[in-house]
Amino acid sequence: MSLKQMIVFIGVSYGIMALLPILVGDIPFIMNILVMCLIWAVVASCWDVMMGFAGIFSFGQVAFFVIGAYCSAILSVSHGITPTVAIVLGGVFTAGMGVLVGLPCLRLAGPYIALVTFGVHMALQPLLRGEIGIAIGSGGALGLLTIPPISLFGYDFTTNNIVPTFYLILLISLACILAIMFMIKSYWGNAFLALKDSEEFAMSLGISAFKYKLMVFAITSFLTGIIGGVYGHFYGVLSVRMLDLDLFSILMVMILAGGLGHFPGAVLGSFLVVAGSELMAPLGAYRAVTMGALVVILVLALPDGVMGILFKWLNKGNTDNQVVNHSNGSVH
Image (cartoon, rainbow, N blue to C red; front, side):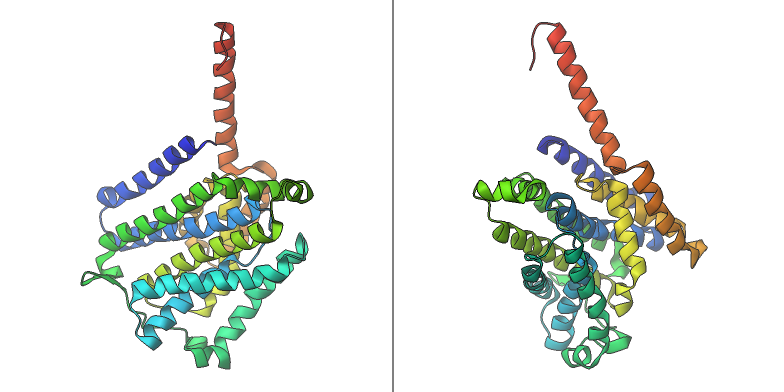
């Protein structure tokens, strides 16, 4: 997909999201779903860059999200730092953690990277619940319950002011998605793809695997940490239950539904899956089973996701145009 097509797709998607509060009103239940769509669109897109473009099978994206959320919350609650500053610092700290996780992964490949990053995910919950977590202000098993909201120019963006808060989060989410888009379409994105397709050939062209793999860990972790901080200050509470496998599996469904490596498919996938997951809430414990079944169905029926179908349609349209132009005596 070209840069122009990406801009149009993202503009339409976020434009529709911006209109929905006007159409449906400020119903808290619906507004919360819309906010979660915006938040998870960023997390899913960052994970898509890691796996779909850089070819790094990292399973630590939820952990980076939680690290950013807790870091920002602890800075605000325990150290009195303004939430807006705390969110940025949380993103920087998460980027640093991403680099630390990425360093040992440079010596590994494929499933071994997945094991290391998933190990970080699994180790984070007992760390936050244990004595170390309590010492740094995580709240232990109880979590954090009094996280201050984002405040700008004396105005508090809380769940009580859900519509203005929605538009603030929409702008933050859009900024993150645009940053991902321009990164993918830059020289960095080409370097990621080159390393994914053939690392030895890419290195022969002067592309440093060490530099660009650490870069993708740092950038995606930073953006994930930023949106994690926004999540914490929006809801005002955090719990280690965020690290349960339910959330991990739902995030995986988002990427598969949109299409792995078919940005901005993760945005569309997150919108569809978050809304669908809420509709399946009456299933209770069977919701996780249903989501797991959807993963299998999506892999078999739509290996390239919804965006894969759109890509084929766009490519078919371009091919038809070339045929018409050729029949008229010119090819563009």
